[in-house]
Length: 256
Length: 294
Image 1: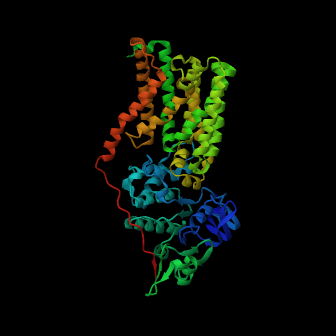
Image 2: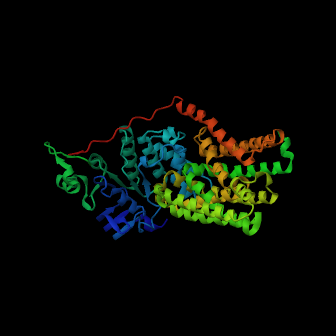
Image 3: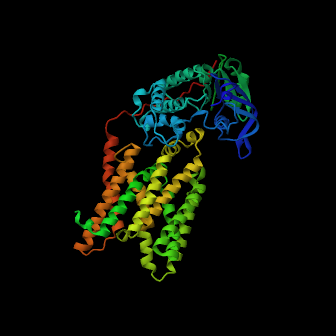
């Protein structure tokens, strides 16, 4: 690992468009994220949040603009940024233990040949401890609740010790206990200097957790600290007719 | 119970089954976990014309080379066809399967010993396994086990979570080709002994049966291997007893496969008992619905 990785922004997008087969899904992305900062991507379903995350991971091409991930272009940085997928994309019947899932976060370090070392096993145990599931290591992944499975996937990402971590809707279908555990673990991670990007359609979560909020729907509509960004005007721009003013000055989204 | 296996041809058949069990146990676990049953079935059929061409060109020894070339070729083609988890490519796979199988049948039907040859290609000749065939199976087995051992972690990651594996820097396309080649090599190793049709049973049934008794991947591989060895031993013995004592012609490879399937059926109640035992039911989920902001 070089010194260039340690300095500079964890993530920098300037005028970026991303999409598939040359067709942009999301345009005009301008982001800058430093070590330890937490960014929430907020927008309705189909807004392009997942596509943006995948572009940072180097899995969806950047069509225009300049993109830098951990000091390299996204494809060059592939494998260095951590990723927490949505748990419902995974087969709950898969015969794999919680410990095995978390160990997957160490696979790149372990390499092809050699067996896992004590340091790897320690990292796995610590990561599980951080998400409050140390006692579940031996359980089969699929026997856990949805929220617990999401925490296991977070533990897997933690075990990889990334400097930039991307989470796709980490609070979707997650119970209150797991949501609290994930929030705590994420705060701890950013406290340690890991930059976080998480997508959510939950404005409460964005407001509570994020240093920066980026409102997207086909394009970037606003970016900045939650207080000045999650305004009624910006939300109307992002959500169109689905943003409804409530009488008490709050705002509600229908069909997020 | 041991005595029939002191005969050289019976002993060789058992050794061949043992070697195949060694690779089919672990490989079937990946076939099961990746849900590659259909791709494996396609592979066994697409190898068929290669087997025929190899046999016509070079006899029994040419058969091995023909199968090898056809298997590697179709491993590449099937990897390309099933790229990106598009399940709708089932149709394309099925077209390749039936087309190649028909080519094989056309080729073999031009021979005068049509029926005998076809039977041998489709159902194998377990009892006529030669020492040279055993040596070739052993070499393929070593290659397969080494390839599986090197790739095990990456293949497991890719199988469980393709997006996560890709994000972690693994090349999913190459891993898929890797596993397809491993499956193709197993088909090549097994094709002469058990035939192109029955080999698919060795790739699918062991892991499916083992899953009934365990949730652990390594244990599944071990149980799968043990089941094949058990079915191999019992199947050979049954076919021997049937033909010698009762004068009933019972194809040995078919007996092995039938016993393997019987083991699968017998283990279904075990699974039901295991899943019904008192455990912790999954906690009800709460959808975070507070879409409110100040």
